[in-house]
Length: 300
Image 1: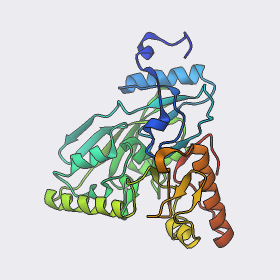
Image 2: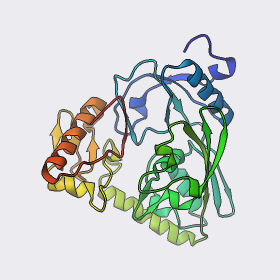
Image 3: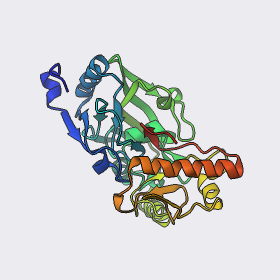
Image 4: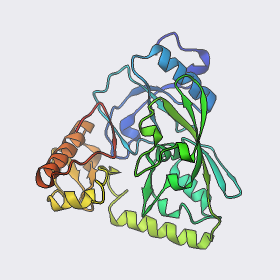
């Protein structure tokens, strides 16, 4: 950062490793960014980036659904929201700051509701989950969100309620409004049986383990399901389960998961394998798979 940075920003100005943070173990080993602990600090960091930086900041949480090129320009600034992680439960409502882990939000709900139990084991933050409408087993986080609080690049605070959020399969308003940064997510849940919620949670975790999720360095499902088809089945039928290209590999457990054995592959190598898989499915079935993973400095 330059000497134009203010004293309040200096305390949240830092360098960190995307590679170390990422569950797939790939990405730049040192990037420049801000790590705010409050909406006020985040607002000041956004204002600084918009005024002084060449490109818009990249907002990250736990890097569970992003793949960042090792060649990303050194001047690229990241906003890491992991310190904005407070969770407050009031009755059957939960207010969670964007950097709180989705797993922590699920755990906070289990004593009074069954609603989120099937989302157990999904990595990442509630902010990222709300932006991407994360889901599993027929439900999605957007089903339970009452409102999302966000900052825009002008510094204005927005309160966006359910009808405005544009929720669809792995999509939301935030997929098209890149000038919005989620700060807090409010969920309204139905009261339920805590014992049943725990049973559903264990079943969800077992289903994820059976697919190999969390057992190997990966970002989970790499491609979106196209329409009513399954990306995993298409990739499997294409003979890609277990396929190796360079140091990256398609999982032997599930063909829609790309893994990084030994955390040795670069983001470039992982993207190259994803590109090969996409082209193979297009060639065989005339279906163009779209990545569920957000790519920065990479194309497939």
